[in-house]
Image: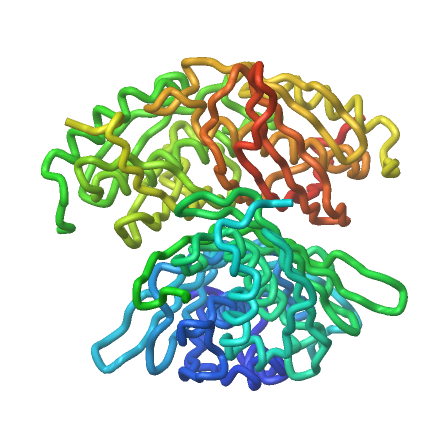
Length: 149
Length: 149
Length: 149
Length: 149
């Protein structure tokens, strides 16, 4: 199991998630948190679609970015905040499903930069389909004004 | 001025935009449409923020992707639909502003692939700040079931 | 085992590799070919370094792109050629090693687009270190002038 | 004109370039250096091609990465070294030309991260064609052992 630098990191990750207005707005919730690995879930909603009725690529990406960013956060120091420097997302299959599952994982957790990956799956009665992948560079920011207690 | 392959493309782009549920949900609207160039605008909303109170990177990206995708769409054949194959977004500055302006432009419009760029600006009383950039590969899909009249 | 659409694909992949002048120039060779998975190797060379004496990120990327592109090629139709539409590479650790191993894999092989990943490892006496990752969009081009026999 | 934090940066950039073995091996040279903007040139060479006889995408990328990285370097502090964290490259047109010109530019120079873009052009008698674009995240590393005098 990956070592935590901050013993309270998993709980703090859940608290930070709850402060993200956009996650409530999009209906994303936390399914699982492990050191360096976060799983989010998102039910299908017609008001989040593109013009063919599939979930919009940007919504899939928002949830993959959050999964990756919070995975990075679990391995950071107690006084660090996480910011997304950049990400790339690829869309392998249409985002057609009853719900969606996003898994973010840390590839390398450095002092300043953390490299992450995420995968998004569409969930139906028939099983799961890989619909998108993301790679991201996350940055640790040490901001006394943002210090986590 | 860039040549249109489909004379009705600019109006069809606006119609397709109006069918995107997620654009209404996020409050994104069309500010300008030119051949190969689309500008979208988005007012700040507290329910679209990350945990520091800035607009979430995923929301900025959703709007940049739409600006780029619809810019691609304006230059496509009449029977073509546009799908995002992939994009990369970089976040240069915090998404802090009264509103946001996203400009998508076509770099190369091919028969199958269209390469696009987009930039996102935060708008305040003091002016505009570049907050994010995106590059994307858009794909033309010829789908009789999706044929535009 | 992944199905081949073209029974001669693995041999044709090796032939195409041998026609790439740049692979000889950089000293890259084929270590293993499976359907949808290609491994390349590259010894360290001082004339391929950046200014700290590590292998240049561009050289690592050139070999990862080839591993990914040839992995895509193994799953294509007999009359298809492969072109790289785009890739993104992340550099997790310095490219410091006696030799380097690049593994390219197909995530999804479509009729027009193939989505691939690659990883690069530095090899030393002490073992292997993940130094870089790549995600790529490869395009099938059907060109009678380029038809493979 | 962009402000230099390090008055000697332009000369130090040329010195660092000259220490990159791979630039000599590939035949890349410096055409122009401005604060935040570096232009490199590269003649066509048959031993740097892919299997259709065009310049390999990885070679185009190596030169774009160098143009972007050295553009970042010109705006850094005197004790900073530049490392590429990640880049994405898109290939718009075949790399077919007598020579190639790569222009790297800084979009935002931060204390730790610098966001850059680069473009690659194929040069023929008939003029120039945009063949590729790159966006990159460069990192400043303060390493006493690497301190520039």
